[in-house]
Amino acid sequence: MPSYQRILLKLSGEALMGDDAFGINRATMVRIVEEIAEVTRLGVQVAIVIGGGNIFRGVAGGSVGMDRATADYMGMLATVMNSLALADTMDKAGLVARVMSAIAIEQVVEPYVRPKALQYLEEGKVVVFAAGTGNPFFTTDTAAALRGAEIGAEIVLKATKVDGVYTADPNKDPKATRYAALTFDEAMAKNLQVMDATAFALCRDQKLPVKVFSIFKPGALRSVVLGGDEGTLVHV
Ligand SMILES: Nc1ncnc2c1ncn2[C@@H]1O[C@H](COP(=O)(O)OP(=O)(O)OP(=O)(O)O)[C@@H](O)[C@H]1O
Ligand SMILES: O=c1ccn([C@@H]2O[C@H](COP(=O)(O)O)[C@@H](O)[C@H]2O)c(=O)[nH]1
View: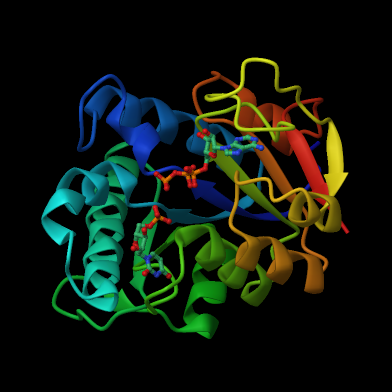
């Protein structure tokens, strides 16, 4: 029996690279989609926000010296590419996916319209929110918090490269230890960088819990949805 009826899944863009240097690793994408399909079979409504780090960080060298807002729009367009690839893989796996963009590019994907997104979710379609918030100076973590609150998701599930929130970045500090749970205020006061402060603050204000877990651990998404002891819960 799933613990949630409706989730907002935030997928790391960088994790899509698999063992490649940049871009989308097909096998990795197929594996992630299989895990999403498993959760939809439990009857859970799934909305997704995907990052752009796998594409945008690959071209970020070229953005040095650029206007920040222009570079950020490039980042948002990278998330559109990832969203299209994810939706295509989901369609091929038998799921019905719809991509909605926060930036108007109607020849490519439909615009984000909240009631339409809610309708798709109720119909059992997987909705992928592309182009972040549509605004520069934000991140896809904040887009996940924003869309999660808008659609009435019960939780934001941040599937990332680490298996939870640590006392320090575990990729830099081998002595860092993992929290089982902590509050938004603690995460912000300790300046824990696993999610940006804007996203944490929005989730705190909307009382929208966040679970951080590893995208690389097979079965972790299902386990989180079934209320298993997985990752780190960040709560009010
Ligand atoms: N206290 C911490 N606990 C856990 N991870 C941390 C912490 N501080 C920094 N990190 C880093 O945060 C990263 C996850 O956040 P990040 O925003 O980089 O990735 P993402 O949003 O999942 O990916 P993308 O930006 O590619 O979509 C981890 O890989 C980890 O190295
Ligand atoms: O609302 C948003 C979301 C994203 N951006 C830009 O896109 C890149 C990629 O997103 P990640 O969350 O880092 O994966 C981000 O670095 C921003 O440059 C944005 O401007 N607004």
